[in-house]
Amino acid sequence: MLYFKNAEEVLFQWVSRVCSGSPEEIAALYNESAVLIPTFSPHTVIAPEGVNGYFGQLASRDGLGVRLHSKALRKQSLSENLHTLSGIYSFEFEVDQVLLSFPSRFTFVMDISLPKPILHHHSSQVPRNLS
Image 1 (cartoon, rainbow, N blue to C red):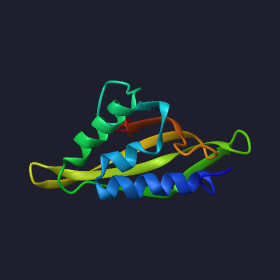
Image 2 (tube, helix red, strand yellow; image 1 turned 180 degrees about the vertical axis):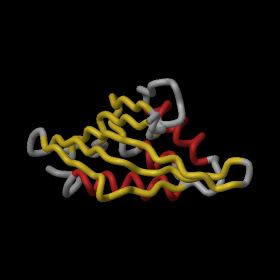
Image 3 (cartoon, helix red, strand yellow; image 1 turned 135 degrees about the vertical axis):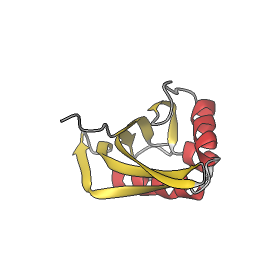
Image 4 (cartoon, one colour; image 1 turned 180 degrees about the horizontal axis):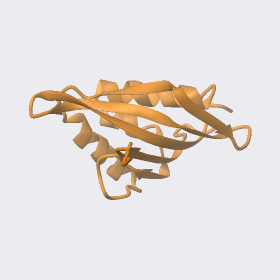
């Protein structure tokens, strides 16, 4: 049984849920044993409560949104149901009443045969070019 048609559907659901600002709905996509290496925290998150807490803190930011750079999206199929998606998205939210954008790299590992398909999620801000 497949809970999602494909890995991209999970990613689009994730983006939509982040933009809606509901931490519970975002956390519902993460498997109970998922590992989250978040964009805006130095700590790895491994428990469902931690995932909910991280996205709850992020959702408290005014103007929160995330924009997917679809041309940068790369998919690797590891099996029929197990996939990785990597690419770039930009978080947007207000800091001191100014809307800022934070381009970030991401990798998701997901099993679309599970109701909570995200097994691993790593996200980090795109570093500045030093040259």
